[in-house]
Length: 356
Image (cartoon, rainbow, N blue to C red; front, top):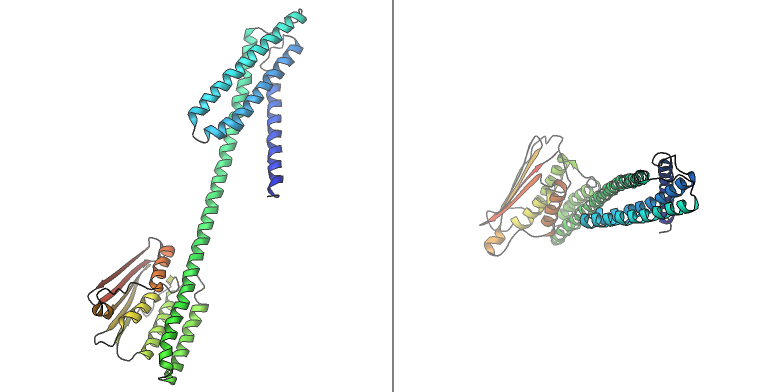
């Protein structure tokens, strides 16, 4: 608050200085250009000083009150109404005062040459011309200043939106980590007492996956090859945990130089293993990915035993899928298409991303 006070004072001083400078020049113009040099010097000085004072006051009212309060706020009728009233009042004050000055001059300065009606009209025209010029200059300055402030506000809004977007992405990505670890630890708990050697293998695999998640996923995008390698390691980890199930994976051997946001594909794979495997015969998971120039097509299809056993069951739940849908919307906007279908005993996800 205290830092803004010097700026306000400096701006006020600049405005006052500009007004004084402008009306000093305006008064000089009225004295040398718009007043007749043939009539008395004293009368010329008094008339120009008074008319300039009225012009200065009118200019302040127009620039500081009428334009910002009515014109810029789209209250045009009120603006023109008060502007017309100000013009008529100032004109009436000037005419009455000039008449008094001329009467005084005739009575006390009988030998002085006084201005006639034509000279007074020219002087008033010059004065109102200065008022109009001051208003135009002020309008241009204020419009330019408002445009700058609007651009600054838009820039600040964009920066805040980007920061908020980044914070949301980081939050959702951070939620994926504990969600994944929670599921793995739950499964690991049941194996520790059954097969210690198998548990050690799982722990080693899990440590490799966590290393990827902690150190490779801090970038906004990573090579597609690393993401696919992570998913394959996860599938191998699930193969250790499960014996009898059908999993087919079709990934390109050379995915190219495409990059993708980390852990965008993985939640769909994890969800398939979480809900697609059971002790019932025929459970399966089919995972495939293809790339075409800058388009990525990812598909996960799995059996859905939960729907067969409970018709009200739906696999579309869990923090992982919810987060990945929000992340896709934030990162790729309208450059992705996600289709999730669930019918009979099959659950399928088709994701298409246009990567630029």
